[in-house]
Image (cartoon, rainbow, N blue to C red; front, side, top):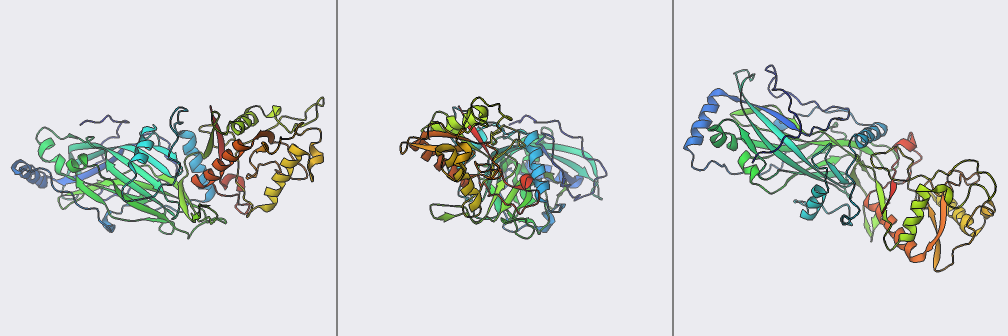
Length: 510
């Protein structure tokens, strides 16, 4: 079955390309939207004639599939290793990709995604997760679809050109082109510093342009190999398992996924949580005694951030290490129509009409010195908007306490800061126990009510009386979100802390 080409193909391989030329793994971000993987394979003329003759005599033109090798063959490792990315370099690269390729938004009417973002990783991905990611849109454009920080999928056009080569391995005449669509589904792990890269050829996507005879007897029986690599030096990351190799015609009728694990190491890291960035990509080639890959085809490298934070847990299960996809904007989504609508409406007002929220910047009748600026609103494609940063009671007790004290001062007039809000805080305190005082930004963020200086508050926050049940449900969603999206806590010890610390946003969905 023919497949539409997603982008214009480059010109034929130069005749001077040496055999086994190493692919260039560019240190810089890939800015185009061409997801085409192009590989070039050389075949000796006498071998082409033998394959044609064998194909015509064969009554069973489909050779059996070869198993995926457990070990990686050195001759199939064409990587050009690049140095480690610093945290700032990694974040800047992620920001460029986010700006260049905003991920498609989930429609409001669409069912919510699977509640556990970091799904168990098996030898085959969960079919429901695969369907959810690919059906959400965007898998075949730009950088693929980063469905959430633990799930990635892409459909990539594969173009393999086969050339007759001379005795020196130099291409002299093009024999044919085989094309197909590679499906990639990758999961981040929340217990190890790794991602598992699954791949296969989309069923019925293969097409041959070799001529009437060779389309039947040569092209379908040539082997195609897929393998995943990591880009950085061995101190940073390594990949496991050898290539998956099958004839093109077998790939075209296969539904099983093959996989590789790409591990990130704790050797070159930064900060309390041992952070580092690394990249992985998929490589396609075709080798045997008769034909040899001249240039392997590589997908654009995708960026992951790995950590060894020790404070993630849920229901007595701990998540001490993880790798997440960095090229997306982490955001918590609250629905306006929900069992926590009081909280959703409060956050919506704080983000969109901050001057109409309490505490006021000045009492009634007194000119305001400025407008309130409340951070954290999710803007698709904008990773530079003012964000929120997580804090915890264990790691930041003074900051958490300051947020609580200022919230109580603005809501109830309680000490030690109640005097600051006598004329600007809530005119009527919450009617407890039916109501509670809700604050935004959250008490568990650096930008909460006590930010930036408890003795010189900015008042860039909002408090409001909300239903107790609504507040409880919304708070539970926030706690779960921190684990599901692997939101790291603020680390003041990092260089350039605002640029490299983990951040997140809040999206109010109507």
